[in-house]
Image 1 (cartoon, rainbow, N blue to C red):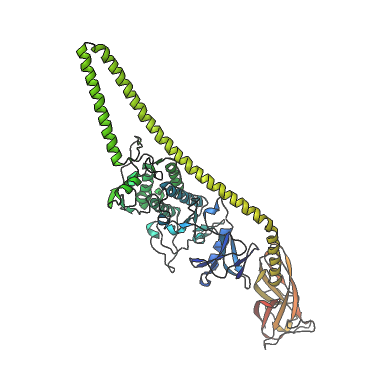
Image 2 (image 1 turned 90 degrees about the vertical axis):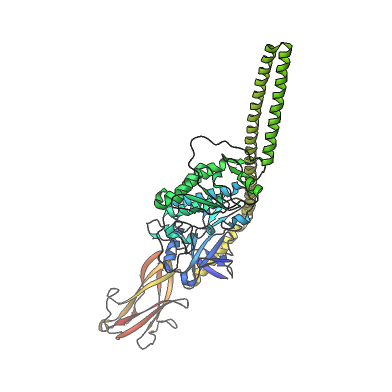
Length: 569
């Protein structure tokens, strides 16, 4: 196992082997916390720019960050305090959007509409915080099939702007599904492109298209959208007019005018309305389709087995006349109903004709004509009421199905909350012990390794300033100034041991020298950065130090922290 130390002071122990790898890093289980994982970069990808980017990301906080695998803490190797990677939330038991159409086959269409809506929300919320994904692709979206929540992975490659306005470009080299300038795989040696929110929105539109069309991809001409419909996809015309308009804005107007590309906010609102207006099929309890569609597209797919591949242009924008929802009747059922209606009409007509002739025969036409007209009016009213009752019954069935779906979701949430409560109660008893263990571990670590690094060493003669030339004829006591970067949250005193080697390699020692060192000196290290000086070392008589190049080393508990050379003229 490997131990890593974070700037927050936490210590993370990574498992022996990674459970997966992605984008130049290996992901490890963290022994102390099963809810997080450690992403440790491969040595050739540990750059100062990536470290600064992760530090900027850990300083950003905004609502519902659980939508992203966002860096929580930056970790370092403790021996040399070198940058190693970061810690992020663990996403388990989730499906990839690129494969969800196979793994979640049989799920109702409302499931995929919800996934599309949640993906739009994640893009919308990130854009509201001034951040950009950059190279959005289907493999980046993980889905929890039970809760239908999504997680956007690869956050360390996002296009990030920190609190001071510094920009860290998108570093992903994965193939994208967004605008033409980002199409294809980004080569490692190519300069990183400038990413925009409109590029995210264009990629979002393609993802939503696949989710609504059961995995089918759109094919686009310069002036129109042409949908190459496979056998498993519904007709494009079965989608609402509002969705057509958004796709047209993303794939046609947005190609030449990126500002016309619909935003994640626009998609979220439209998909929310689509989800709330879904119609339940009267023949299949797991068939949902858009309200206003002529018939259930899923019944059509099941009835025909496999549809022939066809090119279907986007329908013209509809007028203000509302659509009339119709149930998805099977062809045989519709024919049977038509024949029955014809037979009933013919029977009623025959009865009326017989009555008319009978009345005329017996000379009572006027009275019976009035009764017949009254009966006909009552019959037509009854038929109208029957049609209204059938429509109300269909609406009630749809509402009942929605209520059952919501109830199932509530039951799942209640069960999850109960499990979370039980886990929280179980963890509550061990929290203080874990905190005490972590404190002891941190204290042992701080007792072994200094929590600061030395970035500069300057040696100068007594009475001079750091950086002044050291003249042999005037040399007496030499002082050492260090510049440091501290990882502490408060000040602390450290005892360092110093070695000064003469030009001939001999160690400079005196009667008060510690064993193996020239002298020792206490340093008061504050939080952050600063400078500190040692006590003087040498003699009171001018000319104590001969000309030549000397070497100085600073040690802490048998570990050399820094070294440098200086020249006496």
